[in-house]
Image 1 (cartoon, helix red, strand yellow):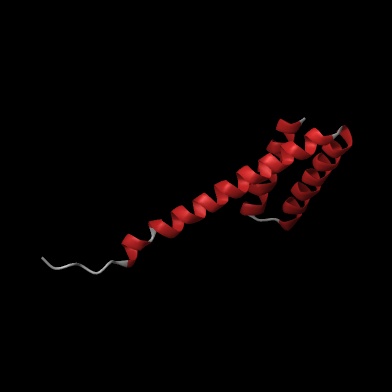
Image 2 (tube, rainbow, N blue to C red):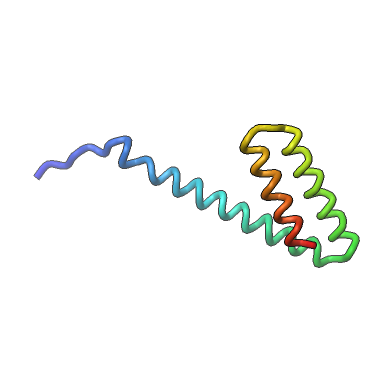
Length: 82
């Protein structure tokens, strides 16, 4: 029995899975940080809402399909925090 060399195709899922884990972790940490910040005080809540709105506007100004999607997702998050 001989071992077949690994093909590039068989190696593709590992980096993709690692990237997905990194992205999901970053998003979870960001959501937790946002919830913690808005729980501190009404002033902190307003500051976080303003910062997210500014980031959504910056993404929209950047343009392109990815930036527009990011802006829409940030706006959706803003709606959940109200």
